Length: 327
Ligand code: TRP
Image (cartoon, rainbow, N blue to C red):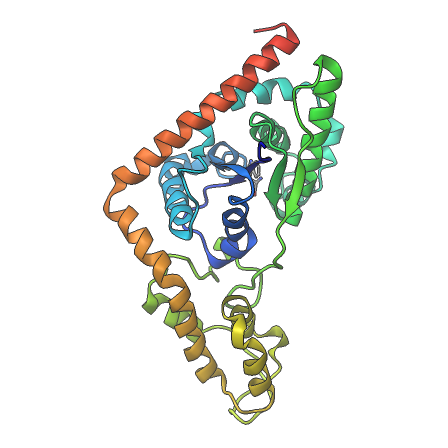
């Protein structure tokens, strides 16, 4: 029985935070048991929004890969590779660019949102509009049956499906129509209560030291109405409680009742959560330290991943060229 395949991808923004973990990585780690998986660092996709800092991308990619490995992605089972090292993605991107209309891409809600937020209405580059086309090439070049993504990426998977259908109708069936595997967990709040995000400077990183963690949690947002221990707490908007629920669910109900009942203060709660999060992060930190101490390990893992990805991509491109009687 052949297993279904997934392609997962992440843009290399640097060290990963707990939001990246619960929103993506945790899901990937679970899925590698059920699926034949490819894990990709989407470095070309960084160009759409960060054209000025290309010199940082390689180092940020390494940081992401070290976090993947430390968190439990298994490079023997599932290749870890870098998008720009598999040039075939660019060839398929060119072909797919012919199979989707400009108005279709302009309707893409993700691009519309970015255009609004970044003020790009009049200055969006061709490659940014084509972001989902390259993403479709990433996915379909591995003939992935499924793609683990968050809600915001569902429109891109839909465009991927449309491109696959269009290609298959024109040239014969080469591609599956991949489905989105939605991440189950809701967004993790950052330390001040907004969405955890690198750019908001409100993140706890997987690679934070115990000292970093302690000082960050000390400043974390809790119920402002709870001043004394005996004040009844309102844990709904409390980020300490949100982290507790996610990373130490065993006693979350009890702790919540104690907070509401005025039997647990925020300082004590932060202390116990620090200990629980340290217990969660320690094995991760130990594993990461091994990769940091021996950069050759990561080089070898990526070289192997690139090779295996390239092999699969080349096989698909041979089929594509044959189906199109071109190239
Ligand atoms: N667009 C994705 C994101 O920002 C990253 C990505 C690029 C991706 N190519 C992909 C995700 C292919 C899944 C499959 O999160």
